[in-house]
Length: 311
Image (tube, rainbow, N blue to C red; front, side, top):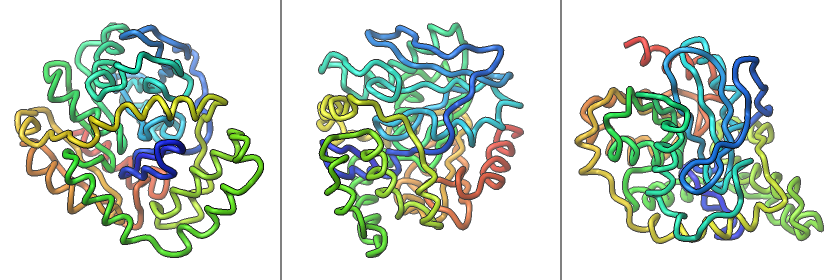
């Protein structure tokens, strides 16, 4: 997937990382939204549904859970969905110790959140960049997992991620990038107004949809301090240039769903590697969609996830 960052680069389209989308989450009567102190920061949490707990890990980075919430909400009939905004993201705290901007810390945040909420074993549902965190969590905390659901995941090694990036760049058509310069040339963008930055981010996702027009429906929370958050996330670059989970994933024993839209370049790159590495991995490819199958093909997406859970 793609890592998007307006300061680190205009489009770290790191294989779906900057996922985003639709209406803001609605509160539910039995759970209250709010900030929870964990691991030296405060994470924003939204809970809904009932059943076995499933922590939902959004893409991005530096996005938030709201682009996933409307599309995963129907799974609340089977699972208690625990959405959270990652460190530096969304409505979570926007200032952290620079030494904490590490892959290991983002993974430890998930474990600290599980403990703070008093959960035992959990499912993880993770999209894009979030799926890298989920895979690393599975390696670090195997006894805390029920299953993994990896949606258009980031590749499990830095080398494969770069290969996916090259494949994505090669697939771009002129209409995918046309207009980006005009958006960046506006006074609103120069003033770093959140609405203008959202427009640029939304435009950068066009190539990740079969139906390009659907990228205009993406929404996400961008605060006034987004560029500062993005600057801080730059401390992650070292980790992102060297990670390699392939051998460690061979010890992951939980059932794993690896789900892709068929237009995703990673299907035959990172997807093959993940399926080969995780013993109980099952791969599902959804036709007529790209990096956001839950947006473009919601019925097929829910059918695949429910089938996995039933097994």
